[in-house]
Amino acid sequence: GAVVSQHPSRVICKSGTSVKIECRSLDFQATTMFWYRQFPKQSLMLMATSNEGSKATYEQGVEKDKFLINHASLTLSTLTVTSAHPEDSSFYICSARRPFTGELFFGEGSRLTVL
Amino acid sequence: RKEVEQDPGPFNVPEGATVAFNCTYSNSASQSFFWYRQDCRKEPKLLMSVYSSGNEDGRFTAQLNRASQYISLLIRDSKLSDSATYLCVVIMGTNAGGTSYGKLTFGQGTILTVHP
Image (cartoon, rainbow over the protein chains, first blue to last red):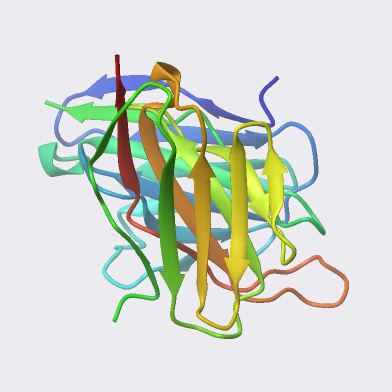
């Protein structure tokens, strides 16, 4: 079964609205989770590292005020795309690392389409 | 130079063929290595970890060459279902307790298409 669960898998929204994506670690406690974005035929791009109980660390070029990350518990991180625009349409994937082994497990991904 | 580089391919091979991918990394402090498989429009899934001594899982063999700083994935007897993008992942270090991790970097992926 899934080790990391992501919801929703698909969302369509109007330009200017905000969308929240949830990422849950089902099999282990994850102090750190990661959020990626993937455009068609391109590799995963790390957007930010979500840290439980503290602020997320954003990669260069990623707007922290646009992509709000909250990691309120050891099993849940959320990504909110605020005031979404068509160029934000993408495949967003979260991941969590299993402690000690370091294996990275991914959520199923959320395909966002902004009209 | 990119931190982790893969030949993007695509590799087009017939069923039953043997195919190998390499992934080079630039930072000698890298400590953990993985191969992931990503199907079209799906999330990446762990295929196998790569151990220093090399490891095998069925038709798949992974190897690490620290001296030359690359990892490889060998697929024997290719199946149609092996068609996917193969991503290598390189992690630089963990702390002693294993609770925090160094930087993780993905290769851009290698596309494999196995045809009848």
